[in-house]
Every structure is written in structure tokens, then in C-alpha cells.
Image (cartoon, rainbow, N blue to C red):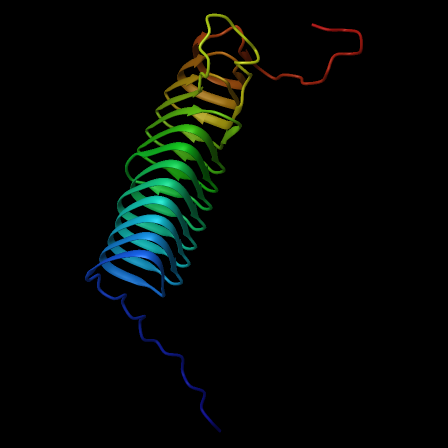
Length: 263
């Protein structure tokens, strides 16, 4: 009787050493990239993984596997099928689509960035344009300007967001929280068309100082709470330092009044 072969118990081979510097222009295609420095200007298709010290990508680049680097700078479009791990800073100007998660020392974006899973940044996270994260977002300082949509929890020491369009946040946990809409036309009087009601929806907020405007949130817990214009907070645990007359605290019925009656 033949004895079945035992499965191999040898550890996987280590990845190749990062050696050399490559600079490419035009349309390229590679199985993998392992280098100290990699610069591409044009269009690139990587069917495997990218493992480099420094990467500068200018154009349209697609990576099927994971991307690992010490520093990453992107101008144009970058799509990564695996996880992105950058020990230093990621600077992205353009469009980024990451089907995995992102881990970085710092993250700065200007454009449209979609991260299907969570984002963990050990330093500051600064986003301008549109930022969408399908999981949790963790950073020391979170600042954004534009449209933001985070499905999971947002955790940082400070959150400073200037939002526009329809934006959503999951639970927010930070010592200092400031959420306010972009003021397109500053006017001395209230104009409903130019100053719409809440269009940032948040699950809950827990912090020490919370300053809100144009926000709809179910629960807020903080030592000091400031409610600017057009806020609706269902439940509050803390002290309201100031509340604008256009803001409302408590359960709100959205049932339309009977026919013939108006407020």
C-alpha cells in the first residue's frame, strides 16, 4: 500500500530583498515589484505585489496584490486589490481605490479615495475631497474637508470636519470634536435655500468638547456641548454650553400635519 506523502512543513520563502532603483515611463506590466525606489510615470499593471522603500506613481496604476512601502506618493489613479501598508506617509492626489485595508504612519489625500476595509493611521489623517471608508478609521488627528462616509467607528484624539454634500459617520470617539458644514455664501441673515438643514448623519459622539452645526446625531456624551444651527440631537449626556434656536434636542416626529393645518 502506498504511503500518502506528508504535506510540506517548510516555512514560506522570505520576500526578495529590496534592491535597486527603477524609473519607468510609458505603459508597463510586471508580475511583482521589489525595489528600494520605484518611479513610474504613465500606466502600470502589477499582477502581483509591490514591496519598496519609496514609490512615486504618476499616472494610472493597478496592483492586484498587496502594496508595502516606507513612503508612497501618488498623482493620478491607484487601485490596489490587497492591503496597503506604509510605514511612513501616504500622499495621494487624485483617485485611490483600495479593496483591502490601509495602515500608514500618515495619510494625506486630495481627491476621491475609497478604502473598502478599515484605515489605521498612527499619525494624522487629512482628507480633502471625498473619503469613503468601509470599516473603522483610527488616527491621532482626523481632519477632512468635503464629503466623508465612514461605515465603522472613527477614533482620534481630535476630529475636525468641514463637510459638504450628504455625509455620514458611524460612532465618533475623540476628546475634541468639531463638525460643521462648508459655508458657501456667508450671509448676515438666515436663507434656508443656501443654509440647508442637517446633512451630516452620525450614529453617536463621545468626547470632552463637542461643537456641532448642521449635524443629526442620536446620542452625544461630552462635558461641554455647543449646538450651532440646524442640529438635531435625540439624547444628550452632558452640559449644553450654547444652543442655536434652530437646533432641537429630543425625539422628533416627522409625521406631516393633518390636511388644512400648518405650523
